[in-house]
Image 1 (cartoon, chains in turn green, red):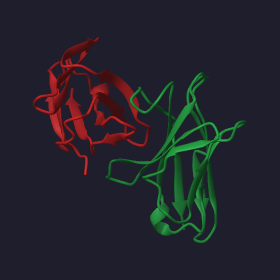
Image 2: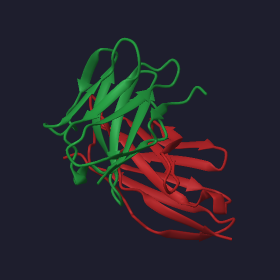
Image 3: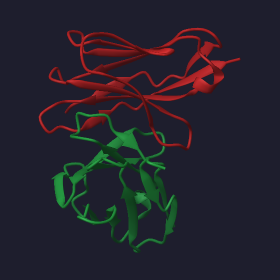
Image 4: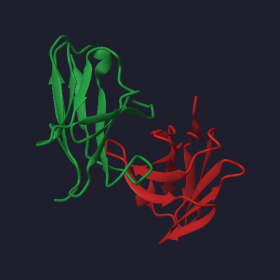
Length: 114
Length: 111
């Protein structure tokens, strides 16, 4: 399967725990984007990464959230000390070139904070 | 603040009819425009991209772009019940900007 892969598909965390979400881009794609979708709301951009570089993190909350895309391995979105308001669907997308190009989405990770 | 506006719907059309979905955007410098389909509980699926004024056709789908009016639309011909989904309009504003999504229009195609 050459599509964007995300895992886990569902993640349950208690308040105060850490959530770690993984994304492997489509084959041949080197640009990765993370989005968050709250129920009944639109997709909100969080961060744009290339290998070993954060290109734009203007949509990331200033605290508790971080993202990386190492030279080897998947991109990681990390949420520390989760709160109930972090419960959402987190989608990763990838593109062959920059953000003006077509982005293809993975299946998403549904995070539930109890 | 760059915005993308869509009528939330629901838009209900009978099977076989043409469904027309509309989107307006605030940034006059926007250069790339995309339509995504999202079924309930699933991830967005890219169905059309358009970059220049005019029409672009792909099967039953036609995207229309009018940059002067800051307006982009999606027409679905011969609508099928399987087309029932939320349709998201996304706009890329240029110069390191990021995709901005509208909240989507929910389409219901009645058999």
